[in-house]
Image (tube, rainbow, N blue to C red):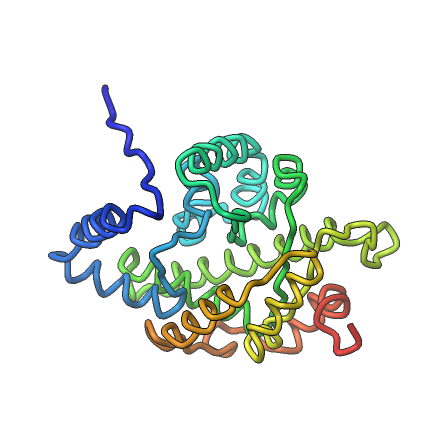
Length: 284
């Protein structure tokens, strides 16, 4: 079987970029049900023309979204999350893919990678990219968990019988397992044996979601200063323009609550106390 390879297009080729994006979008214009599904997902997780690099990992079979919404009896972390975490080859592919993009369209300063899936393999990630500068955003987990559940249900909305609560309950359980493992991986990567933050890792900048939302431009300046990078006036103007044109909720308002997923704030505070004290405490 012969498969035609689709080469990357340089960002400078705006006409070619638009043609490819329009071709992708037109592929589902006639499918009203699918279009509605994409609209619901966009309200939960906004879609932009510049893709997140989770798509590169998924090309290598790493953490397909179907795993999160899979409806099977054996839904233990060992049976699905741990198996994914063994796929170090996904980062071999990821690095080759970035080299390919770089050969066609090298950025002026650096590549920006954004995927929560990197959390599960941070040691593998830094082995492939030893000079990487890591920005870790920390958000209240009593907001993160219901948001994740809502996104998963929006993604799986057309896959399951809405009159059968078993599938929904299993998806919520998987989301809890997903967050459990993420927090576990962060704590192992960031802390020493005595449970305090490992100060030897100077290539990491921590920022809370609340501070980022209050002053995004100021936070970016802090990041660039911390890593000794130059933030130009043109870049700041571009950021202000993007924020103005892409206000939160533009693609739909994402609403959710702990109660609708059978969750409560006290349990979350106890379950993730160590993480919260290290990264979300007002003292830090």
